[in-house]
Image (cartoon, rainbow, N blue to C red; front, top):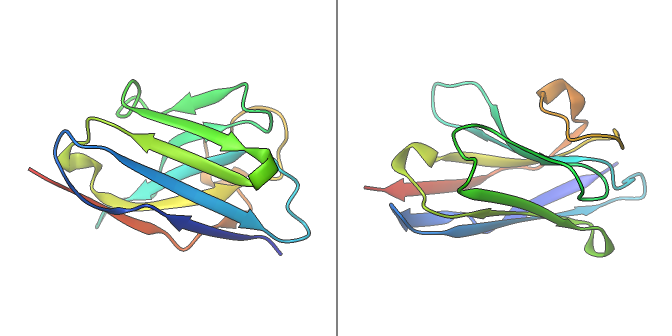
Length: 125
């Protein structure tokens, strides 16, 4: 079983920055693609960003492109989400997810096999 633990969430003013981290552990973790999703109250969980196994291919939702950066460190079994120029509409619970897919940066929830518990990000106006 794979465990994912997120950290780095919190309260920030609009225009500020946060960096989310996600550490993966477990014997079955194969360093496949990883992603960040978010879910605001009353909404569906949506993809924010994804990165392939080697860090050479990424995907960003249109709403965060140019402001957020996803990266990974396979030696540390970790993935990160640098969030800049935060807006109140970025407020949500952010979830780290791991996929067994090696090729590409998957964009749909069904492509991911393991999920973290989520970390709250709140952006005040």
